[in-house]
Image (cartoon, rainbow, N blue to C red; front, side):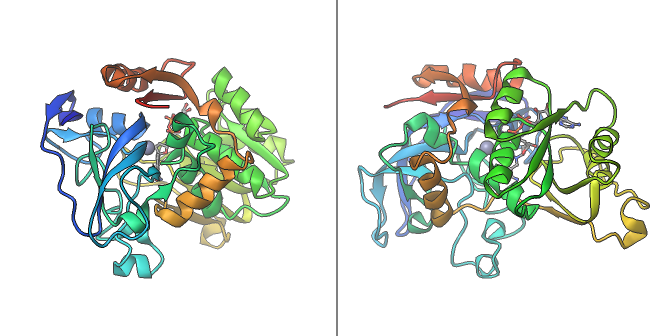
Length: 353
Ligand code: NAD
Ligand code: ZN
């Protein structure tokens, strides 16, 4: 089979590999569509997971099952499935403790294009198929289905980590695709006001559609000064971080009321420390909680989030701004994500309808 791979840090290309072996609990799938993620760019060009050789990229797709192991109960060849980016080992102690995404070690539930080949390949391997795959609802098209691998669960997890409650005033920092889904998640959880940090016109338009009520530009001065001015000096109840750097935490803490919560799903690619401002953190006693997490994977979450899209409660179609058809377009789609033209939210490549 062929796959599109990270040859080494900074280099990508096609590779030929054997079709992966299917263990008793596993499935072998072929993608119906794939989506490119900023994480693919971080992996190749920023060495985010360290050096890798000829590792097939990608962790966002929907797929058709082609083979299942002898102990798989609920899936069979021919099933069309949602595939989460994070595929934990559900019998691990970490999963039993409620942190399946860290099964096998910190962040180790992230297997595709990290510890094993990813999904930009004619065939790919899924561990614990019954625990991780979900049937693709027939009403969801293959392009939208790709948004359920990572963008929806990660953005919504930001809203969970920030513990959004009815009536909360919420700040969402970063409105790329993840931040847009955090806006949507905060809105569904009952936020009364959602201030979004971002300026790209089609992200702003999409954020409005998902429920953002006001906008701030991090290029127009500090986020916290603008947010404090908009909230009569009081700050917001909750902050979701879906973009920025280690420095963004300082803005988040300063923008938050005492007792507020920060949910971060952002990847921190550089810097040694996250700076927490002493005074605005209540000299250590401000009850400002900071929580950062990798998206939870797994079948139950895929089924529930899939149901939100299938029911029409969540429209993910504004995210897929660039849709290609056929394997030949995978390099172009990845390059597009690297170049990030202003009108890009997500590139998707489809292989079926
Ligand atoms: P993205 O790059 O498309 O979006 C990030 C946005 O943040 C951009 O619009 C950018 O303009 C904005 N931004 C940059 N600097 C900023 C600053 N200082 N203040 C405010 N906004 C700023 O990325 P994305 O695909 O939306 O993903 C967002 C983050 O989530 C990335 O770091 C990604 O690696 C991470 N991620 C985490 C998980 C997880 O499981 N926790 C999963 C997927 C992605
Ligand atoms: Zn992703």
